[in-house]
Length: 315
Image (cartoon, rainbow, N blue to C red; front, side, top):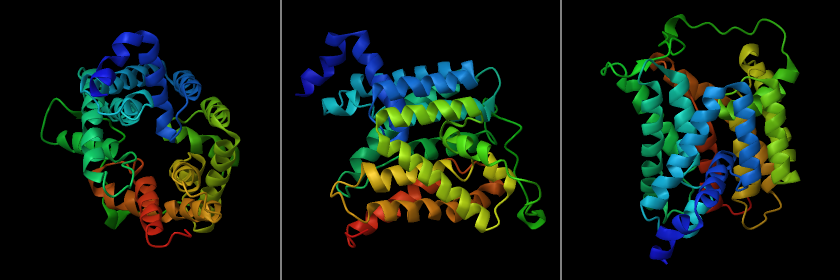
């Protein structure tokens, strides 16, 4: 079995590599679908040609690491499980770093993310709790923090440590709800572009009507919750409260609902709402370090609900 997997991509050649890479892109949204992955790639490229190239290269690199490393199950490589953390890491480091080594660091980060993914798979295998995007989060945070001690890593000017003692909450201004809807799904890939958001909705509906419906519901739940709790209007229409909610409702209500629990839709909505205060708190904790929250709220909320299901199966 292991030998067959090691040679599988070689025998099938470039088409299989690309299909696995596209699935790696789609796995960012917990979806295993090559067409969905391709549409997502188009959505990213529409927003930025640079990010489109980085996304594709990162997905290929992650897939190759899984293949060349002799991953023990053929399904792991071909389903894209070694690509999605690489994709997010490549995009994140490209956006948050600058300088002549930006591309090199981003693509090396994509390769390391695949290795980190394998490590996390091993350690969390017995718990039956998915690793989700934690390898991407940990690797990105550590890389950004390294910039304070290593000259080769140059932080983007947008990442500035802030003093909490002088922080003021700004809830002035109107909310553009249309932008909030499409930016919510776009921010999963760091995108702030309405057309890209529309294409991403097309991508999830292609994977199945449930994904499309839950994407709308999860984003709406986050927007309403954030508004009711007095969240900053700028963050609402930029989609920074929506993307974690969408990923969380996908995980809790669809992907990891193996028992087809009748309460899973409600659990997913509650989990999506919970991402709002967790996003606010994680962002606040990281402000003195100038670090972004990334998808940590999604990981925390999903782990909380999936872990609780081991004891409280009705969740």
